[in-house]
Length: 428
Image (cartoon, rainbow, N blue to C red; front, side):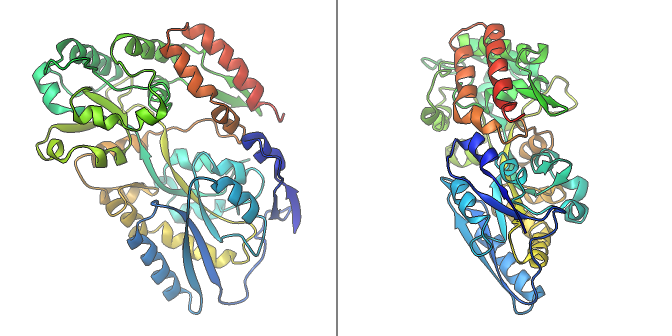
């Protein structure tokens, strides 16, 4: 095995002094081939995969691979990157398969910590897999993971307030802005300090929805060089729209992230008419509102009525450790994970949009259709390990906060574009 130092990527992204090594051959072949039955270890994140799906994976794997066993070990999100830095390079410590957040995958894929599964992708779902997640698991033209599950942002709204104000469900971004304006002016229940929409600059993936839906972006890459895109006409259009909302359509633009995590309380109380959130937010909506049909959800609209706008999709990929001695068995388990039974349980019992959209119909409930539509048009942040610097240093959060405070969008964008280019191109 050839040893490669991983400190370059992980050090840049997470500012860690420790180094990490991963096992891979120059040809990127599996690290080793098992000669018989083995005990396979799978790392899923806590609350990511429902117990029913975990049990199915274990039962089916052990049935198909006589003499081998499979153990699921749930991990906490907090500290997982550091834990993977320690475990992935070691044949004795590494899990055989591991779940990573979609924005984390490139950190490890870029340095050879995951096995190349490009040739397997078609049989694991092919074109039915969430494309933005495939992109996040790709590096140098090869694929090092497949999408496990996803949750994209839609717009929750109070149907009773929309009806009283005579507002129809928005089909385009222009419709959404008109709905916000109309609802703010109407304040149908005459609630003190009413806001048409909850939108906090600190909750970056919410304002980011405007950026992506308008066709804007943080940065683009060509021939290995990243260029900031916040000064582009599309991005500037989005920032102007956001600043207008923050100026007079919401009172919560400068809320902390902890306050933003409780936005559903304001929604339940009727103090805000809309909020941008993922499918799991529905669990926090007051049952009496849900039962009486006073809550709806629509996919974030785009520029045209024919297609939903692109929004960030949170979720996970699943990969095989390059240091695993059980490559063939890991591939067998991966086939089960991406199969109909497992993927359907992620939807029906876990409440997620499955990574294979062929099985997305297993997700049911009043918001299922909007959730599925949102994921199909999802978009991710720049696919580079260095993106962690921007998020780790709160560059993006501070960027939106300055816009919410009234700073000139063009001036702020120019400044942040320069900072992003310096960060993203630091290793060039």
